[in-house]
Length: 357
Figure 1 (cartoon, rainbow, N blue to C red):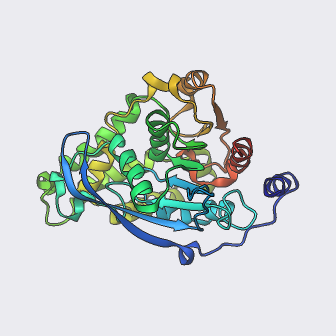
Figure 2: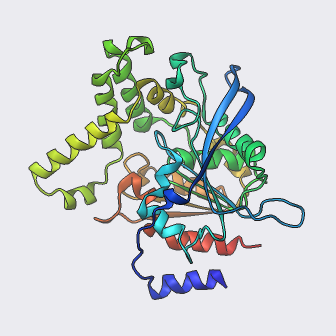
Figure 3: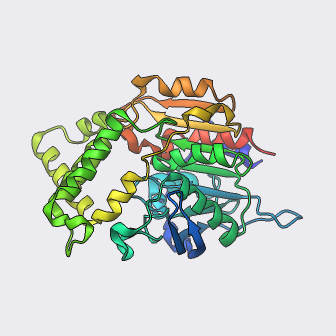
C-alpha cells in the first residue's frame, strides 16, 4: 500500500516539501575495526569508521535486519551531505521512498573522509595507501561488526559511492538486494577523468609549502589549484549560464565557491581521496553482476560525459541493470545531479517496487 501511495504522489503531483532538520534525528557513532589489513599489505591496529543513521532497524523472525539502506558519498564528502533538503526532503520524509519510519538509513563516512580515520589525524603521508576495495571492505565490516547488518535492502551511491556500488556488486553479490549508483562509469579512470585528478594532486605536491606532507599550515596555492579543478569538473553549464548570466555574478560565484572549498580541505586528505581511485576497474567482470540495479548518469556531467558510449556498452553486459541518462536542462546540476533527488525520484520508486519481496 505504501508503494501505491508513492506512485500516486508521483502521478498526481506531490505537494511542496517543507524542509526538515534531519540532523536533529541523527544517531551517530564509531565502529572500530581491529587489525584492518589494506590491499597494499599495510595494517592498522584500529581503523575508525564513523556513521550516522536515521530510522530504526527492523528484524525478521531470525533476528536479521531487513530494512537497512546504505547511502555512500562521493570524493571529499561525508554521510552528512545527504541531509541537504534537495536530497533528504525528497526521500526521507513521511510517504517518501525512503521514509525513515520504514527504513533504517545508514550514512557512513568512508576511510579518509569526515570523522573516519584519515591522514590528517596524525599519520599524514604515512597513512596506509587505501583504495576503493579497502573502502568497500571497511563498509562491509562496519555493517556486520558494528551495526549487525548482514544484508542491505538498498545500496545507493553518488560519484565515488557510485563506483563503490559496482565494487560491491562484483565482490559481494548476495549482500545487497537492490542498488542505485549515480554519476559514474564502471571502467578504469583514464583519459580526461584521470588527467584532471592527476593535475589536482600535482598542484598540491608541487607547492613548496606542502613539504612532502609535513606542512605547518595548509599549502594554500596548491589547494587553490586542486579546488579550482574540482569546481570545473563538477560544473553544470546550462544551469550556471542561467543562474549567473553576466560577468560580475559569474566572477563572484566562482571566487566565493573556490574559497569556501579551500577552507574545508586538508591537502594530504585530498591527495589520498583522489588517489584512492587509482586501480578501480570493474569492467572485466561486469558480466558477473546480477544484483537488480538502476544506474543513473546525467547528460551534463563533465566527469562522465555520455559521448563515450561506455555506459550503453556496459549496460548491455549486465542484464539485471537498467541504465538511465537524465537529460540536461537549465535545472540539472551536472555531476551533482546525483544529489538532486527530484531528477531520479521516480526511478527509485520503481526500483524499490520491482525488488519488493
